[in-house]
View 1 (cartoon, one colour):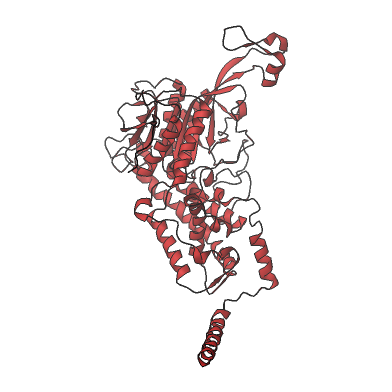
View 2: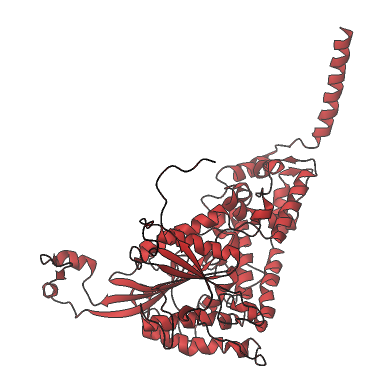
Length: 549
């Protein structure tokens, strides 16, 4: 009995000390806290999806339509050539970002605190890597899956590659880019079974050395690396982005600290935590960091990335158009030649679907070369109201087209489509009314145009359309075609005229006048043997039971 009494007294004493130790963490559920919790925990974002506003940490998604242009190929049109530039798929972080994650983890674990509301998860959070040696900088499963799915989607969209045909793509030579091209190829060619015909349905990835100060200049998928005059202005992207972050990160930290007792978050923590929304959602499906912030805080976070890419590698960098123009020029020349053809003196004919894979910073320069996403002026004398993007406040105007998330998301892409359209032909509704006559044993049919009365003589014309992450984008001052497309001849004149003048000569604008052997044009798409070829066989899976080790 005496022993039991002593134990009871000891237990009471320990409970007393424990109660005192935890007293500082007991939440005070006053009306202010109740309102904050209610706002945060019940439908915190109201349908707003943070991962679509996470800049380069966003997974691939369909960007919103701009200028009200429908996503579908215009009625009466058929795409006969298309050229894509694709960022590599979702990957694990680079060492610098991983260090920030590890420091945040250490901060969460090295303190005693009470976390409530949207931050209640942080005591149990761990960085989403468990095999750092084999993961850092390489594709994750989302990156592989999105690249595969893109291959499937584009094969169905364009129907340019018949069954059994071989296919070639081009890639910058860093492993995550090559892996993206490879998974794309497997998705694109995953049809049929060619185990007994191994020369069919094969893919080739041509890898191109990353440009540097001495090779290969513009004839690569990373031309900015070999343009010294590009590097200086590109630093304005990070500088301006960091300046804007000073306008909101401390305020955001103060709001989140309301849910913490014994731990204080700062602006640096906020930056890492918002980064982790996109990264965690892609690596392991964790959305806790996404739910911790409000929609307006995500818009600020996104705008910081917009500034980084607009001034770093987009229209705000005065040399961006110079490094983006060689790809644009090469594609324009192939569109002028037409599908199944090459340029004068070309030794290689690329497929009608031209696929190139690279890094995020190489896509905005092509937009700059096109003159896109840098003006709201549509009439002579009209004042510019948005660009260049202001640094210390976010532009709310919906006319702002430049959004980094729409183009540099993981597996983000820009595309130029060449389409042949029947102009003055019967509309789909008229076809249904007039009727389609089919002759026995003859594929296809004919419409009796005489029945329509007012129908003009149909004719074929060719147009060009720009897309980013699937969303059609109007080309500046060239929208007279179906679905605001640009007539091919007008597009060619623009690229070879005012856009070429704005870009300038690569060697001169990059400050390489005293360097011999500089290549100022992109030729790998039409030159046999340019790059290193890697075979990607997609034959099928052998039948039978697998051997069990």
